[in-house]
Structure formats: C-alpha cells, structure tokens
Image (cartoon, rainbow, N blue to C red; front, side, top):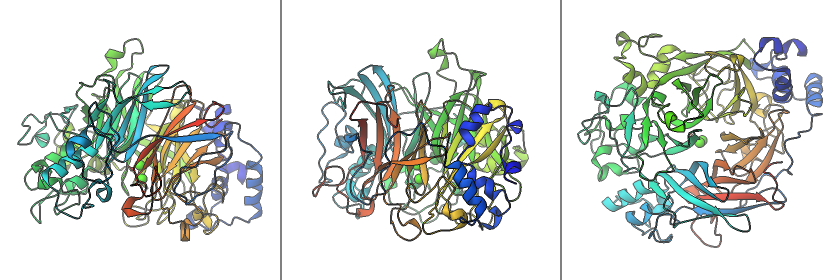
Length: 637
Ligand code: FEO
Ligand code: CA
Ligand code: CA
C-alpha cells in the first residue's frame, strides 16, 4: 500500500531521480499514510504500526543542510538565535534615513515631515541590492502603522491633516544604503544619496492593460495613469535586472466615507471596500480615500509596483498585467525558455494563487532591455485536483485573457483591463480553486519546485470553500506549505503536480491532520506560516504570523518565529524566536550568505507588553535584525 501511494518518478518525467530523492523523502511520509484512505475523515492515528514504520524510516535521514542547533519556543521579549549566532538591530521604525531627518522621538508627537525622512513603520518584505563588496542598498516595505504607538493619543481622536499625512508617510517603501564596517557588521548610512522614502503620496505610473482605462480615471487624474503612492506594501520580489517589486496587499482598509452608505458593485465589495470609518481615517483629510466621492480611486491600488532602487528619481511603475488583488509577494524566476514567470498569492480566505508569464524574453546581456518585461504578458490562476483521500495531485493554470475561458462581455468583462482590475472575479469565472490564504511563494534554486505558504483559514469548510485538495482541513487554524512541480520543469507550462510539504499542527494537543504532518513535532511546531524564501544553497526559510497565545491549540508554540527546512529530507528546525506580540516577516541575505536580515514587525501590537528592541520602559518598534555567525560562517550551515 505504501509503495503504490508513493510519488512515482515515472509520473514526473520532468524531475530527475536525484531531485525526487531530495524533495520527497520526508515531507510526504505522513501524507503517504494518509493516502491509505483516512485523510478525508481526519482519522489519522499517530500510534498505528504503519505510521510508526513510516516515521522510523523517514527519520533516519539526517539533514546535511541544517547545521545549527534548534532554538526552543519562547514567550520572552527577545529575539533569540542559535548558539554561535548574534542578532543585532539594524534599523527601527523612526530612525532617520534622509539627510536632515530628526532622530526618533518616542512621544508620538513628531510631525509628518519628520516621519517622511525616517524609516517607515512595520517592516516587511525586503531585498538586498549590492553596490560593491561592502556597500549595498536595502529596499524594504513598510506595510502599515500602529496608531497606538504612532500618535500620543493612540489613535483615539479624530486625526488632524498633519496626522493623516504622518500616517501616510509611515507607509510605503524605504530604500537606504548599508555599509559593512571593519568588524564585518552592516550599518545604515543615513548620509547616502541613494536613500529614499516612497509613501502613500509618491507619484507613480500605471502601466500595462489597465493603464488609462476609464475605471482608473479620477477627478485628480483624468489620464488614469498617474496614481499617487503605494501602501500596505506586504512582501516583495526582486528582478535579475536590478529592480524591486513591492506588493500592495490590504489596500481596502484605507478607503472609507463621510457617508454611511456607498453603493458599490459586488466586484468592488469583493475586495472588502465599504463605507464607514475604517480606522485609518485618511478620508477625513485626503478626499481621494472617500469612496462616495472617488469610487475609482481604489482601482489604482492592489497592484505589484516595480521600483528602481538605484535611481532615487525614478518613478515607480504599477504593473497591471500582474492583476489586481491583495498581493502578498512576487516570486520571480526566469524559465529556461527565457520568459519571466512571477508567482503571486492573493492573501484572503478563499482567494487564489496566480502566475504571470511575460510575453517577451529575458536578455541577460542587456539589462536595460529587460526594464519593461512585466508590462505585457499572460496572467493565469491555479486549479487543483486530487483523488478522494489524497493530499497530492495535479493541477492546471487557467488563462485570464479577455475572450477566453468565459471572460467575455456577456459575462461582464468588457476588455482585458476589466479582467485585470477585477482579477478575483475573473478567477471565479474560470473555475480557480479557493485557497487557505496564499501568502509568500518561493522558487527552489533548482528552478524545478515551487513552494507557497497557505497561512490558515477559519472559513474552510463553509459554503464555497470545500475541504479537500491542498486545503484539507476544516477551520484550518494552523496552515500548511504547498509545493508544486511545473510539468517538465517548464514554468510556462499550464499543468503541474502538487503535494503538501508540511501541514502545520500541534502534536501535543491535537489529533489527526491537526497534529500536523510527520515533519512537525513538539520541538519545531508553529502555526500560520507566512514569509518563505530560499537561500542559494536550497534551505527553505519559514517565518510565522500566527497566534502567540501559547495556550490551548497553540500551547507550546510560543511567539512568532523563523524556521529552516531541508527540502531534501523534510526536516524543519526552529532558527529564531521573536519578541512579544510580533510577527516575523521579511528576509534577505547578503550575497556571501554570511548575513541574513530578518524583520520583526509590530512587537507589542495592541499595547501588548513589549519593549523591543531597546528594553527598559521603551516604546516597542518594528525592527530589522542583522544576524551573523560568530565564526563568520554561512547562515544555517
Ligand atoms: Fe501582509 Fe498576507 O501578509
Ligand atoms: Ca504576510
Ligand atoms: Ca499573515
């Protein structure tokens, strides 16, 4: 039974046997057992002889990739790393990065002009751009801001015009130079001419099929091509031609109205847009966020934005060919055909997983010629299939092109611009699979396997979100990590094979599928995987944005954390733990892989008792940590 349920290399001609050995040995062990027929009922019995046999077999393979000692779960207000490692703050919210900007003032009374010259709040996705061996730029997302810390009044009052501007300036992207000192540590260079703040008010350009469309035009911008700003910049991507991709996620929360009711079509409300005060209060002093007055303004957000970090004057470009949804990250790879392929998650319960394939090919010999590769191409959305009781299967990429797959005027799509602006509705029209909140996607450096975190989904099992396939648990409180292999290793192919690399769970308090897959145990358990990324060696780094109560179904998991997995053996080992009430999100390596930068977002959110990173009685601040080995070795090895 076990054998016939193993992944058969003959079903995967695109994958070499060595890759099979590397990619399937451990992660699938419990899954293989589940294929025996108990998966649908969730009646897995951990103590069964078969399970023990499978576990025993799979555990004999020690990881060659993971060379560090595991960090225990923690509820302390610290950032803990393995023995032999050092973690230091690189930069925190409010630190100056533009010339002349003031130092951080914890009172909450600093004005908008101060914030506009300082590192934004809630550090998230980031990328490292080398300038030389000892100089580099970091481009970093500042996803949102916490009013309980941003303002002395903690957001309990109506905001003034300057306070709205300050909030808008705490959002966006920060680009700043870092330099390596004689001790090998990286430090921010606030005097650098490269340094830049991009905020909710920075002029941008729309490109691609939706640019200039009637649905993009506003009173302030009749061209429909010149939006202002970016916000709720979640995770990121990096192109081989030297640009940074920032992804607009929960843009809906910034739109509100002075009116109690605003009539919006369902294709707009699907993004969560609605009247009433949504907390950020921008509409009070910036009319474009008033839905009753400017219903097209939200169409100008929810995109992937391309930024040239090397040119502080360059206008960021919103790439509408990549679709409009609550973008998490943009995992870019160059297919062997030369096409640029970008995998994209839409982080909302029951939304979808996408990929973009460029029309033109990447030219490694002429980077300037690559600058507009994201302007034209084809967007696809994923549909997954599985046999009953199996947590693996095949899938298809369904094309989102006007005139195909029912995306016609008859069905409400007048043109390609509408398909892109209302990509969610288009995905439903073509029959995409509803997912458990796709967060980051990461492409294995062998360019054959792709991984995506499905963070959790309390609504799984409700109408329209059936249990099964890659979303195998009702009321999914822990999340899972999906993996797929494009057919023949071709990222432009419209078919793939998939399985789950890990099913997060709590084996100390839960049973069946909720205990997690075989590579989850009492020493490495976590919930809500979110950020993921590979280093060049092929280690899979996993960051969490989950429940940190450390009680009940989350007992023993502690604070949010970062783990490292060996895709070869399936082993997962905890690498770092964050402070109180934070999320760990954002990671980027120096090219020598001897430094990793990791984001600690919103420590002490909702006034939880954190004083990270300065300790004492200080105000908690989102912070990028710089992590190195004391012996100067490679991170993770
Ligand atoms: Fe900004 Fe889905 O995380
Ligand atoms: Ca996230
Ligand atoms: Ca999340």
